[in-house]
Length: 151
Image (cartoon, rainbow, N blue to C red; front, side):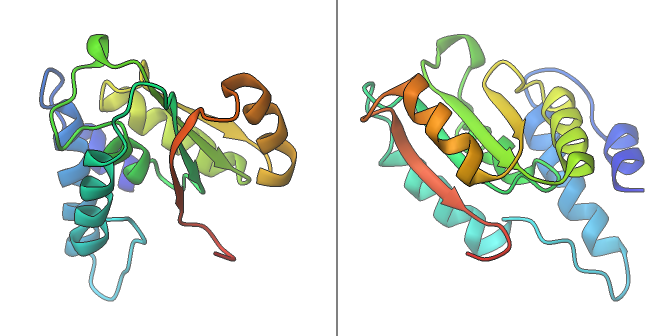
């Protein structure tokens, strides 16, 4: 139902990412006695503030542990700040253990037109983090957002 709502609501173009974020929140507000765990409101504002302090060029990756439906991954891609995909030198890498969540998050990134800035990898952090560390180097992570079960 969430995916269908977002697909029916979002229009492509420069504001697609903001449209996806708004559609996800709108969906959760329309459902009586339904809570969709996304990093909106105060938590979203905290993410946006953290992004302002994590813009150093030497940091190449913003890491998210737990992608769920892709909401915070889109937010981490700089959507709220209006970051332009072709100008950014960093990427968002989300790690997600649930295959269904991986598919939904990737689809949301595509709808938001942020797939060039973000990826969702399938697996557990303990298995994926060593490979990611090898790929980006010691100083590659500019921000780590832990929003998954157990954190």
